[in-house]
Image 1: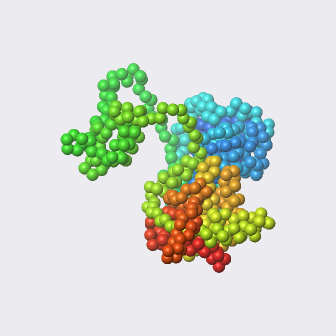
Image 2: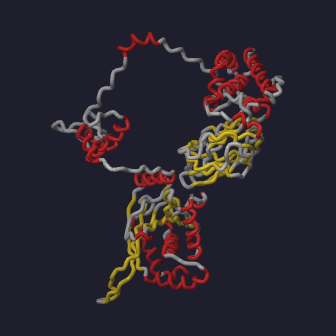
Image 3: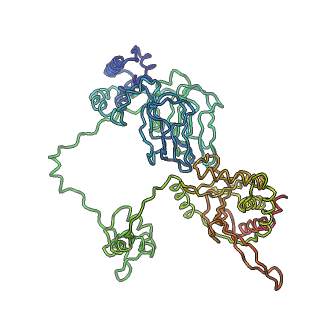
Length: 615
């Protein structure tokens, strides 16, 4: 039995179409009766049901459910299928692992929510950049239905039935248009609410109510992922859910967008079977079926029209300086030379028509400039001539690149560098590690750095903050992210409430998180968050570097290697000490220079006096 007919069975029965939908013959009978009803001007929902049947082409397939690519992290818009754990024909139960999905953050196991049998895998293992919400597999309830999907290919099932049914659909259009003049029953459209002060859009994680369910004030309608957290959307009205206009996993839904429809009486639910978001935005009356566009003219009649072909667009005015020279910025000229395009005739948006780098990028994207022979030759001469290997970019690397580029382009960075003497810390570490030798524990210098940073954030809370546009948010919790290099890319798991934990607890947590990151087993709650980041390259012998702020945080600490340095400890008296160089990168919108300096002073005080950790 087709899934569409099964869902339409209650409405068929209500209309007096007593069809036993358990057989193919009954389905054919149902379609025939529906066509008869349409010809007699019966209610419009029947034409909608028929159109759905004809367009989707599921009349020859048993009832089934589409499994769509889930959203497994707040920022995920697409994912890669690393591996399927289930094969076609396998039984599936709630909680079973269906597949391993590579998101923008980590590789996460996708758990089944339904039971049944895998009828068809549409996106095989290794599929890249699969959009959230895209169908990746089909599942059926009965094992006997598996054979019907053996030769199923997406889109192929619908083409033939749709073509064969075109005359019937065309004949049904006038009846549908006539029936569309009525109004929808009284209803209320529920729109995406603003569930946080800064929320401008949200994601539908999952609906807790389905079409036909009753709702009362305080009932949970669905879970909405905002810019800060996943929050339950509670109903303020009572009635029955008539339509869900957004599916589970809907991404970046603007606040105020239609999301669901509620009616007062359950009997009215069926009337909204074909209600869409366009109906919610366009008014109370269903839209009539659009008339078919006029057929195109015969090919022979197109020949005389050739002379009227639109003329090519006139070249844009050149940004010429006195003497005929093209006026362009040095960087714009560099971009044009690398791309092999000519700036002659290009218009500039800079002062006096000067061509900017942005103008060149638009020119390259539009393909509107002819190659400059000299520049092309120079670019070819500069290209490497040896062999090369293209390395596939993982989701993590791609998203990290996008976020870091956004950070450098939108956050006004500045940098503060300070040296810290480590002799006291190294002595304390050696003493503590001797005490821990029997238990197997061992503290690293990085553990002390995490603790010192947390204490400095407690002392200077203005750094433990984020820029929110109209205000600055200072966090009460101090969660320190630690940058970890993994085979899939850079990960930044965080130690929650680091200021309240001892060195041993921090050490164990950092080791566990780092191991999970390298194995790709981090859970979302272990890396989605944090209020301050530490990036330590000291183990590679790097003396000093500047890191890029990890938005929405306001600062990141770059830690170099501990190196020996001769310092004057008293007039005329010198000694060699171990010195650590750290650089604080700050978002100037949140952290002023003096505040950043105050934080570094507090950090230096904690690092050089490690026994302060016990206070």
